[in-house]
Length: 84
Image (tube, rainbow, N blue to C red; front, side):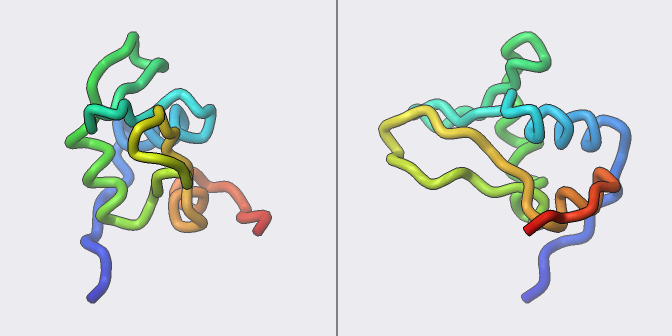
């Protein structure tokens, strides 16, 4: 099954840029927050990006704060060349 298609809207690109800068994290309570947007909760928005395959949660324990990271697809959406 393929990931749902999303349009790379300006708001989604800004959120991806915050992910790239390691400013979006998941709290142990399950909420995702963006330090780049004044601590704004972005749980639903980041779930859409994850569903589209643009971001993934870094490895770690569910009991720790974990940062979201771009996938190769997410980097392409931002117009970067994947280095992996």
